[in-house]
Length: 276
Image (cartoon, rainbow, N blue to C red; front, side, top):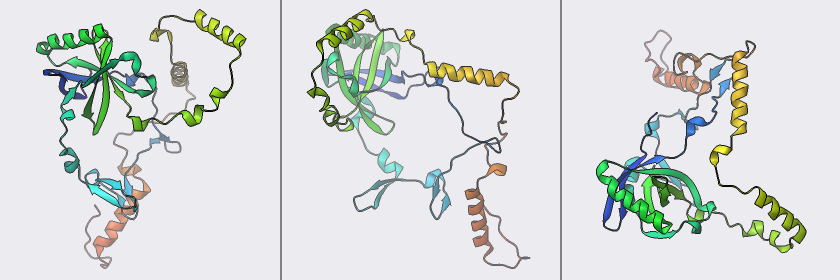
C-alpha cells in the first residue's frame, strides 16, 4: 500500500525553500489488533457519543470546550480554531542547529520521513541533507499538523531526511524526585568490573532486524492454531454497520422518548409522526 503524506509544505533554510512531504516512518499494520465482540451475541461492540440527559448526539453538534478554573467551559467552534494563522502550518523553518548527540532520547516522540515533493526540489533537498551529514548536526524547527504545533529535529537518514517530533520542556516530568536517593550509595568496584566486562562482550553494531516482537509472534501463532481448530468459537461479520437489529439500549430509549414527545398525548387512533 502506497504511503500517504500527512503534511505538505516548505522546508526552509534561510532564503531557500524546498517543497516537501512528510510521511510516517512507523508501520502500524505489523501489529496484531483485536476487535471487541459481545460474547453472548457474537456481534461487534460499537461506541456512541452520548450526552447525559440528552442521549446520542451527532458529530456535527459537538464543539471543543476548554474547562476554566471555575468549572465552566469556553466553547470554540471548529472554524474559529481553523482560522488561527500560523506560518508553521505550511512552513518548517530550520531556525537552529545542534549536535545530534545533544538531544537525549527522552525528548524524542515520533519519527517521520521527509521527502522532496518533485524532481525540481531534489537538488536543494540533497544540499541540505549533505550539509547536515557533513556537519553531523540536526536542524530544529516547528510545524503544525493535526491540530498541534510540534517541535521537530531534522537529520540525515540513509539517502533522505528523518524528522523526529520532540517533546516540549513542560511535557517531560522532572526525574530528580525519583532518582535522588539512588545516587547516595557507592558502587562496588568488583561488581562494576564484572558488569563492564559483560557489556564489552555483548557490544555490537545496532541491527534492528536482530530483534523480534515475540509477543506478537506468539499471538499470531495462537490465532493460526485457533483458526485451524473446528472447536474454536466464531462470530460472523455483520452484513450492515451493526445498527438496526443490534441498536443499543440508549438508541432505543432516545427513539421512544422522541416518539412520546411527537405524539403530543394524542389518542391511540390518532395519526402520529414516526420517530426519527
